[in-house]
Image (cartoon, rainbow, N blue to C red):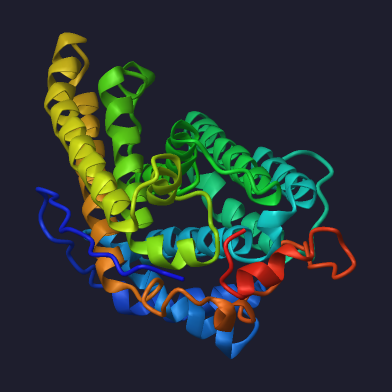
Length: 360
């Protein structure tokens, strides 16, 4: 059973997203790339990917005139979205024992560990390709930040998987922590720096002001996602959703939970705006050179673009528009992680519950 909700308008005081002139070229090329690495193997899976409107990733870099750089960004986000679906909707998210070693292999690829063998697992082969296209054009410090963020993402995905597998509801604090880390926001943030060739020194990046900007961005993006996905995720018992956690922990109605998350988003927008005013003063007080001041301003611009672009993507894509019943879409999920469902396994009873829309 689902309850209709109304999502109040979210006020973001930033200009509406602009279309990149290269936008129309992105989806066909990304679909070809996804097919080449078998992230997409059927027409049904291709249609699923089309509904996501991933060409709107160009919102995150509207003025970028480099097709390879913009394509790299779109391909990374495509990989992340396919992986997220595997964990959230397919059986991978119910098998932390099998998911953990796969995530460790992802880390090994990003570290460039010696002795890594080419993999036939689609997600690993695709990640290897992405990293080979990304690493040579980046500095060691950027690669470390990127690795740290992705490694933390994998750790949070595993924690959420353990909650699903054990049917353990999330308390609100845990959900807030995991939402910020499981939404690929830091991935996009880091890739914006990479494709624009911006480097922010630790004296600014590690400051309270900048970290507030980064994590308030993550919260706003992911809590907005939780509003748009609430009806669908509540129907099949998803736990990693702030509105659902509030609804369960505080015994709220669906609409009350949605309204509460909306208020929390508004508060985080205020945090972002306050930190954005503090950042230039910080740079001046540290007496940093003009190029650092320009980099800080560019980074702030890109975070504003990320916030607005994510919001406008949610308003435009069809990812959450096909109703709460996901049974018709599960057949479009290929096993890109090599964690195929074992019908004799003790956890196999969980998957049909998701298909029937039953809460776990």
